[in-house]
Image (cartoon, rainbow, N blue to C red; front, side, top):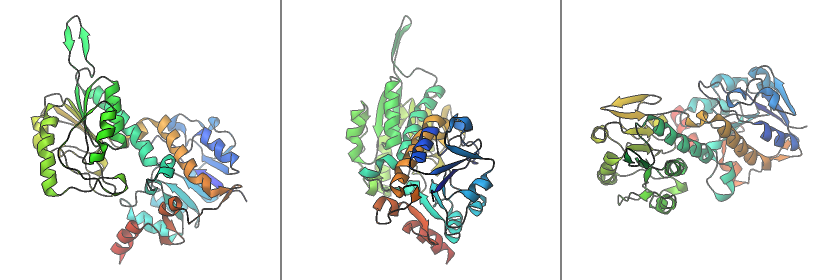
Length: 377
């Protein structure tokens, strides 16, 4: 019997993305999958129900959860949503297990097969499934536009009848996917750009985009492409070199985050007070507490004439392409598991196994299992 794939409307306040766009829904249909869509699920990303073909639109989330074998989401399901999912069904989305351990317990107890898309291993053949990268690229792009809107001057150099306008100085801290996209976007807007990352391996990438790499003499290359946490001595060395670059910048974009841990504090209140009046900081690490001591998650503050903004859920502000990229990631992840419309995951596949959060009443992801079951014992 063909698997029934269900896509509910996201209920998180401010979430405008949808886990399935019309073009990807058609691809699932061609795989032999029956697709169910909660009415209005795509409205926030400008995909009305009428734009979906070969899809059954259902009136309520509860009805969708009752019928669906496989559920696609963006935000983690709430406890109320999990209670509505059929026992033994499958869900794929951003689960944020570190933030919501109680939801992981409920998924386990209801014997729901849960795939955490943020757990997809960062290996070459899984790049097309990497939702962290696709959504981070959008955040990096949007962060620079946010900065440009808040900065009181031009980004590019302009030669005018009134004289020459010098370009803005932009510093991007963190050269992961978001940081590199921020660097590229700031360069497109004509700014003078510097990039910094504790991972020395990123120097070539930063310079390839036309930016100057800030070398603090500290390297923290970690496993899986992430940065390891710095020692106190390394933090002090990093801080002393970065201070002068931050103080000289018109705009600073910070993107340094460590999955499952608080964001490292890179910009102290004291450094903010040394910045130019009118300077702007966009802190993309706000959800983890921020890279700046002044950051307030979801708010814009003015600290001694320096604007500090800590936006949340930035990809949702570009819902059209964010939804399209996310939906393609899910399609690429799930296609190998679907055969003639039936769901047949290969548990020997590294990508599938490592992305599994809960299965058969057990927490399969080791770090989450230690956190959840350790705290419960």
